[in-house]
Length: 68
Image (cartoon, rainbow, N blue to C red; front, side):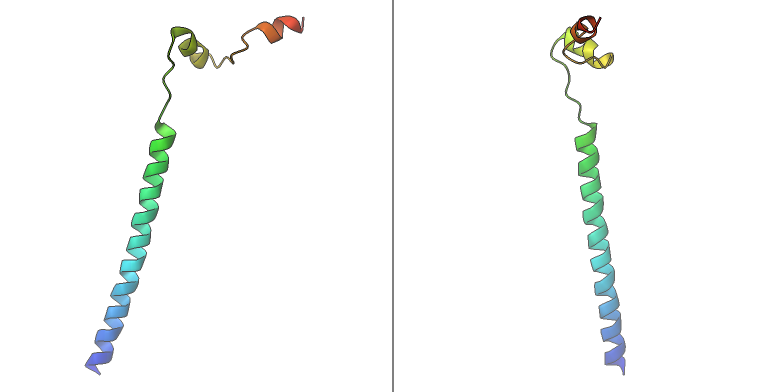
């Protein structure tokens, strides 16, 4: 009888360890994804920085002026 109780506790502990291991793996993946998403590529020139700040594409106003 005591042996069965010990086996049940062992299985419960093993299940909890598996769940915890999965949780740690998911958290690790989430942190890695957050790290990658938060990494910004800094512009190399002031012009590139201004384009990024103003959400301008590299074509500038040329396509707007051509449509007039």
